[in-house]
Length: 424
Image 1 (cartoon, one colour):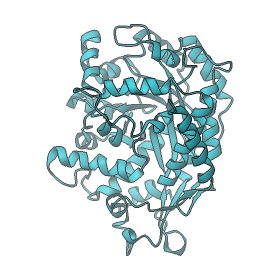
Image 2 (spheres, one colour; image 1 turned 90 degrees about the vertical axis):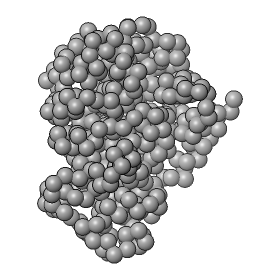
Image 3 (tube, one colour; image 1 turned 90 degrees about the horizontal axis):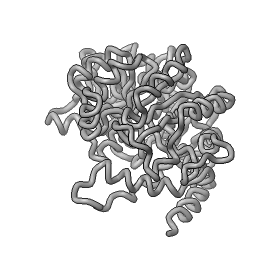
């Protein structure tokens, strides 16, 4: 393992064997989350249309989202964040667009749904980069939001007011950023106004982009350019930016993202579940691009499964093995963990997150006889048994014996909430 990778994984002190011979890793940031969708996992796996796709799944998501309120948002997020900590994530970037009541009217406190997420993060102990989403239109043609989208929407003035109200909550474990839902949901003029209003502020900026072929075709039809092509030409994309998915890219777009310094948030299990497609990982690696992983819709909440399928998707497409490697970096497990950690820390904007630690099970058969040179390959590619023993965030123990310290109470509240939401 190179010194550069050791430093990325474990900080300036390098590799840490931990006490009693147990291995310690830096906790992984999760770059893309819609917390409420965890409660939908497994509920969209029956065919509703012979042409089922992201767009038909979205209709079910809208119906489910229409049932939620701040209390159910809190219960679901607590369950999800506890699961993330148990999986070895230490930070989550919450791409939050479920702002208002189901009829689109703001709650008495317009930040109520945001504050439910903040409370869940604080109560479970995960670091949170909260990304309130600007969502203004129903398509590239500027159509109004549909009835089920109204609870997502803001005017630019109301959105800036929400950001201002949330700034007062920031602390050592809560970072505020901004999110543009997508180019189809944020027209060009307000996007420019928002970026001008944020000029000079070092806030993370995240955006869904080029996730589906239909989105690329619509952008070409209306704006005369592909989504990533248009964004790179019309926005000051730099290291503050995270492009979520960026699945459908030309070689020129691959080079352009890498040159910009932006990070790509890749969500392999969700992208597979929705049939989105495969990110061109090999070309992006060779271009020197930055990337990390996210669990997005949370059909899986697993660090190793995201990393494994990031590699396996490339193997299936190329009919070759060991794709995520570079000269001098022949280990896929090491490269993927180190690169996703580095990209994740950049995208979440929380430097202290590098201090968070995951301790692996000393007695796990999958790690028997593990050495520095093979640990991460074995951790990522040796099956689905949980290998996380302890997780510490900001120096506080949050997971012991593989379980969150409040797991039982959190799970009971989640179960009651889900039964109520699904009762009819």
